Structure formats: C-alpha cells, structure tokens
Amino acid sequence: MATEISQFERQRQEKLSRIREMGIDPYGGKYEGAEQAGDIKGRFKDGDESQRAKCAGRIVLLRDIGKLIFMTLRDWSGTIQVGLSKKLLGDNWPLVKLFELGDIIGAEGQLGKTKTGEITIWVDGITLLSKSLLPPPEKFHGLSDIDLRYRQRYVDLWANPEVMELFRKRSVIVQTVREYLAGRGFMEVETPMMQTIAGGAAAKPFITHHNTLDMDLFLRIAPELFLKRLLVGGMEKVFEINRNFRNEGLSTRHNPEFTMLELYQAYADYNVMMDLTEEMICLLVEKYCQDGKTQFGEKSIDFARPWKRAKYAELLKEYAGCDIGDIGSIRKKAESLKIEHKNMDDAVVINEVFEQTVEENLINPTFVIDYPAALCPLTKRKKDNPEIAERFELYIGAMELANAYTELNDPAVQEENFRQQLRGQKETMAMMDHDFVTALKYGMPPAGGLGIGIDRLVMVLTGAATIRDVVLFPLLRPSEK
Image 1: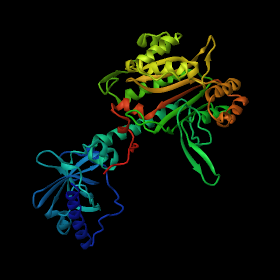
Image 2 (image 1 turned 135 degrees about the vertical axis):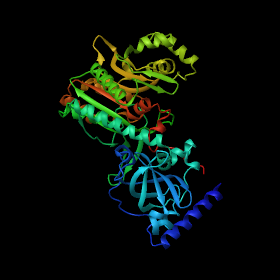
Image 3 (image 1 turned 30 degrees about the vertical axis):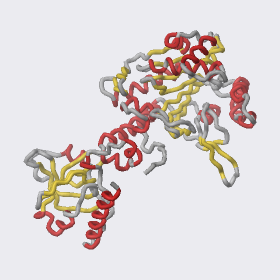
C-alpha cells in the first residue's frame, strides 16, 4: 500500500514540476471577489444570461471528456459545478489538463445550466491556488477509517460534508449560548488556565513547570474558584466558555481536554440554575433540532417541558433498591455490582452504586437534585437537612450534561470542607486554597453556579455517537503506522 501511495505522489510531483515549468505558481496567492458556492446557487435566476460568478474551492469530482471538462468544486458552503472548455480557455488549457482531484482552484465565468439542469459556471478565467500532492480518499466518498478521520481531520472536513456541517453547527450552538447569556445580563470573562492549586473539582490534574519562577503549575480542572472570586469583587453575573484539563481516561464521553461553560449568578440558587439550564437548552433544541427531539444513538430524546426533577435518594431507591441511609445494603449492592468498595468512604460508595444503576435510565432530560452533602464540598446545604446539598446534575441520554449548586459562601464552613476533602493526603494545608477562603471572608453574595459540558451538549443536539466526533482534534494514542 505504501508503494502505491508513493507512486501516486510521484505522479503528482511530476505534474507540479510541469506547472512550474509553465511559469505558474502552483500555490497561488490572494484571490479576491470569490463568492461561496451556496450563495451563487441561491442567487441564480434561470434564463438570465447576463449572470456571472466567481468561486474558489477544492476539486472533488472531475470528468474529462476531451475538449470539455466538468469539475465539482467544494467550499465550506457546499458544492458547485464548473464547466471548462478548450475553446473558452485557450492558452490555459494545458494547465487545466494537469488539474487533479484535491487541487484548489479559482474559477470565474458565465453562470448557467447544463441540459440536465445543473447550475454551472462556464469558465473563462482559471487560477491554480494550491496543488494537492496526495490523492483524496478513494472515489471521494469520504474517509471510512474512523481512526484516520480523527488523525487527519484536515481531510475529513472536506471529504465528508456532514463533518463540516457538524462543526459549523457546533460553532453556532456556542454562539447562541453566548447571545442567550449576554441577553440575560451575563458578562463573559477569562480566568487562569495555569493555576498554583488544582481546585474547583475532584479530578487528577496535569502538571507543568514555569521555568522563570521555578514552580510547578496545574492546568486547570475547573475555573470555579476564580469565577467565584469575581462574585466577591462585585461581578454579579459572569460566565466563561473555555478549556478544562483532567488527567483521566479516554472514552466515547471523555476527552482529557474539554470545553466547559461555567457561570455564576449572585443572589440566585440551584433552582434558578435549573430554570436557566432548561430554558437555554430548549432554545437550542428549537433552533437546531427538528420537532423538539433528537436521536442520540439508539435513544430518542424528547425535550418537552417541563423537565423531570427527581431527588437523588428517590432514584437510588427506585433503581438500586437501596435506602440512602442504609449503608450496609448499599455496600452489599456494590458487592453485587463488583465495585471495589472496601476502602471507599460511604458517600463515594453510594455514588458508585448510583452511577451504575440509575444513570442508564435517565434518557429524557432529568434534573437529579439534592445530593449527599459529603460529595459536595463547595455547595450550600439544606437548612432543614444538613446531610443534603443543594446540588443538581442534569442527565440527557443517560449522560451527565450539567452540574450546578447553590454556592457555599460561609468561609468557616468552606475551610472545614476543604480540610475534610484533603484529609489523609500529604501536605494537606499546602494544597488548600487559602486565598479563596480569604476572598470568602470579604463576603461573597449568595449565588447559584452552573457548569455545562459543551462537547457533550453538542453530542446530544447533533446525535454524535462519541465525543471525538464533536472535537476537531481529539487526543489519540500515537499512531502505530
């Protein structure tokens, strides 16, 4: 196979040399005045012979029938056919005969239709903009090797139009989120991605080193503690859409580098965050999904409002058959699920059982509310039951999509929770975020906070089967080739 590919490349190199011998730059330059293919088709008026068009794109189909060549050009709006004849192009015809699939060209001429009704640019001006030295996927039906598609996304995007459309859709989804939040008075901010303390979530961080300061830093696992510092500073509604990094496993739902929306609203609570989440996602469904539903794998998801709100303990009882207060029965259930639970804290065992028994049943949007407080060190507890935290997680398609709290703003309780969380670890106090506790001592307003995984949100809205389908360049194991 390697020899065959090499042979194709050599043939293209030979054509490249011939183009250069003709005094033509095979890698072109600025090409002004080109319209997108979709716009050209959209403005076409049948029977108007005065129309002209100018476009640029990659050759994805080529039919050479002697003195006439038909090509299909693709740009990111779609495709358009161009017709090239020896009669119209004259001295440029030898160049045209050297064009191949994958080359990027500019073409202009009269706009019309073929006998079969295909909108076509009858080219009288041609420019080579970039010579392709590697052949496109066979028959140009797109890359079928999934691993190769992720590694060569630069080919996948133009070889598979549906992939380009998915990432265009991702872009407008994120833009709509920004517009929605701005319309509600939120301000977009940016907080550090390199942090001296890995905080805001329970996850293993990536560690890097700053040479000038001679100190280790962590790529952030969450922006939470910095965003809440902004609440202290008087920024009452803030959000950030940016990267988080967690040094954990790879799966269809996990990429170590992922995009998160995180927002905080002063004088709110987790109920406000639930309403905001439901309203915003339903807006996205209305704009980008048909009939208020999506197909996510084998699951059909109905986004009809109001969304279900169910207590953590009640779901555990329903699907695991365990009372949240009976840790003995929960550990017995963990045993039957083959969970290694002997050295786990009770709260962690409960959550492991919850994840294995409950999550798979949460298909339509479901807010799981009122978590065990021991799992939520940054969350305010219920006044009538301090064992329960005012927290929710949103599940759609049996996948966690969002996490939200009524934020803890008592500095003494927060400091003690940090101590509890870090107990048993070496150099516990060295890892505590003292500055965040200091910030709370100045006074943070009561607030609601929310995090939504953008990659997972796009998966649900587009029906993508894996997170790698919605991340342009997912992390992959080194290629063995």
